[in-house]
Length: 279
Image 1 (cartoon, rainbow, N blue to C red):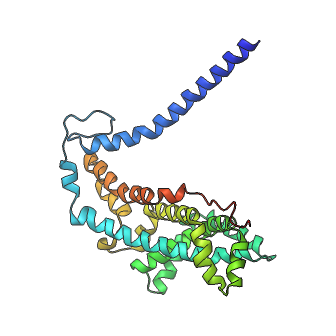
Image 2 (image 1 turned 45 degrees about the horizontal axis):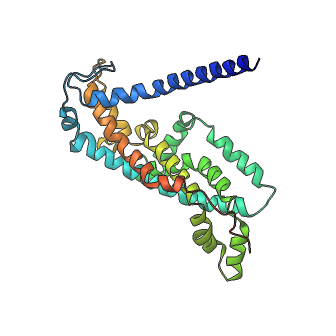
Image 3 (image 1 turned 30 degrees about the vertical axis):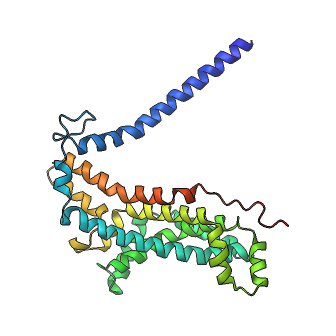
């Protein structure tokens, strides 16, 4: 009986391992295609070893019009919108976390509902509004909409992280004469660094890969971000330059990877507030 149980557990463990390997392969194959096709002179849709290593694909895309200007536009749009989102989310989450009211729960549920609204459902009225207020085809208008679209979920995340900071620490600062805003800046936000990092990365990544919003709100080609300019590699008659597309994808992914690497230590740092209020 014991042997039967042991063998059954081994079979279940083996089946789980095989399933995980299949899932991992499903994620790794597209990445392998991107890396291999970027250095393949005859790249196609197949995942194969390159016929010969070449960097001509990178040479072809590393130009001002194809890569550098769109990447700069993306950094301006996503960086500015992420900064605005994090600041507004922190200011909105603080009273929700620290002050109790019968309106807190309905407000949070409304925020949660706002996160489920499809972006395509609100783009038509947003486009009409932007035309009326003269924000269409402007970087600042797109930044405002990016921030507004990410703000509901950012507030929800920020509030949950802020709940983990003991209020006693702020009360000690208030006793010393600090205001609520000073305690937020000097105590709460530094202690919830991992939470701020999570909100920053999540907001930036969601904006970085957004094609629809800048495609609708920006009209001038020189203002288009990389998420829109990548569409130029797909020809009108089904022709695609796969090698250059793969090379551009690698360059396009680099800022997100660098952002994650830079704040990875903050993401894994934890709050470590267990003994902060003892003594």
